Image (cartoon, rainbow, N blue to C red; front, side, top):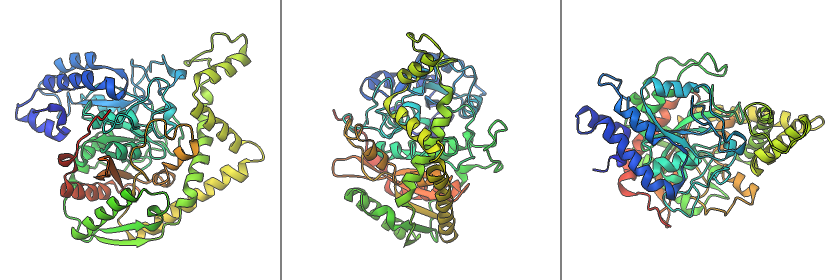
Length: 483
């Protein structure tokens, strides 16, 4: 038995029956990281030594998830451990406190195996924009894992962690989940606290999960969801057990299929795989209807205006004065600001700060930022109308399968277009999940996105779980680590 192949709920079953111990589980993952990390480059900071020490000290009567390992995206603050955002700017920053999601993880006695690589400050769609390294896709090591949470997705796909936390601002959990053949959930905005998560775009950012299957996704969401007084955007939806939503029966479920998400720019093999998945839902008794959701054409522009504006504001604090990189040659205050930010930030971050500063500047604010916020309301209204009729909406997660390393990194517009299917969900603050629905002719995974109405995670989890049980993706397909 390969311990690292097991899902978390399978690990819990084996711990209960005493077939496995916490020590054996953590040793298996430490060994797997030692074997595969040199190929995949998923971690910024590996914590296996501390993890093994912690595994020895887990008490017998600890809670159900005590001793279960996890990976954490490196923009989530971890007390006493580096939180770099994969940037030179925060290369040596050690957080003095834990993010709320980390407090919740630690309260369950889970063990952090490491901090995961990402696009710098979560800006990018391929994890090629990390200051430290380029993460590779375990299905084909010449391809990207997606981004910005590529390290988390790749580590789960490569069985280096059983599950991981990521963040999603415009698709940064769902797109890498799709490209790496794992399950990625972006919860409703406000369901999970953002306190202690280094901000990119505050009105769009959301912490979410990477797991091997939908059941694990529901278990981890139970841990991290909940109101937090330290986050003013956090919402109290009461106590919920998301695992209760996991049912195979989708008879009578109303599924909307927006035709605009299946048109130009969607790879034919991705489209075919989604069409087959939709037929499967029909066979299972769901009611499927095509409809028009005419937001795709302007959602991307709206997203990049709002995201860059908020990034420009949020990243103003990284000035070379306090806890960030400081240029050693700077001779005065002006040079400290100028040189530290020029040297500390990478090209993509600088590009977005410049764009954001421009759209917020006097004379352009009304033409760009204000207009984008008005269009945002339009996007929300379109989704509200759709959810009056449908329980869930199904689209591709990514227009393509994983692309080759270097293929799009020199063309920002092409990279931005990779988010075409995911950004509208963040603009409207909705929950979305990506699950694998097949592979293309090269054996690369294809992801299906299921979108729900606000705080209706149960519906998307049920829809995803029923399909997952039908196709058994994990039993049929495994990463090949092709070089």
